[in-house]
Structures are given as C-alpha cells and as structure tokens.
Image (cartoon, rainbow, N blue to C red; front, side, top):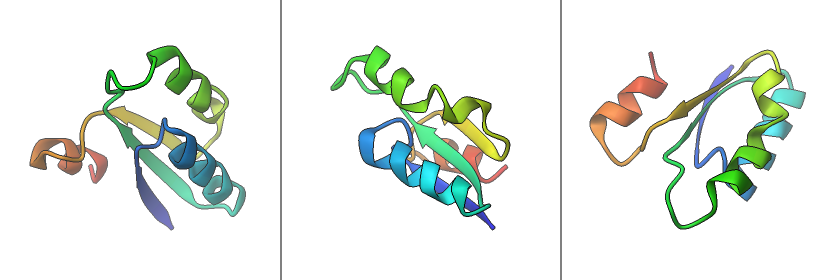
Length: 73
C-alpha cells in the first residue's frame, strides 16, 4: 500500500515513515521544512530514509491544493 505522511521530516513523521517502510509499505513523505525547526535537524531525520526503496520525499506543504496534489502524482 502507498501511504502519504505529512510532516515526514519531523520527529513523529520520520519515525512513522520508518515503521511503515519496515512493514513493506511505500511511503510518500511531504514536508515544507518550515523555519520553526533547523533544516539540518529535519534533514538528519530523513537522511537514512532517502536511501530506502519505496520512500519518496517532497518538499511541499499539504496546506495548499498544489502541494497535496503533488503527493498523489
């Protein structure tokens, strides 16, 4: 199953993505990399996930129709 995870580069989203991938799901992560947290922290959260087969990360916001639509393409 393909699952979309919003906030995928955050603490909860990255751990959820990790668990879903371990359960053989495909994950499309979406994150806007907001300025509320250091970008380096969020990049570190998804560093290992980027190399996992079945994981795709989009830098976009789920708060707009365009950003959300990108996750389903």
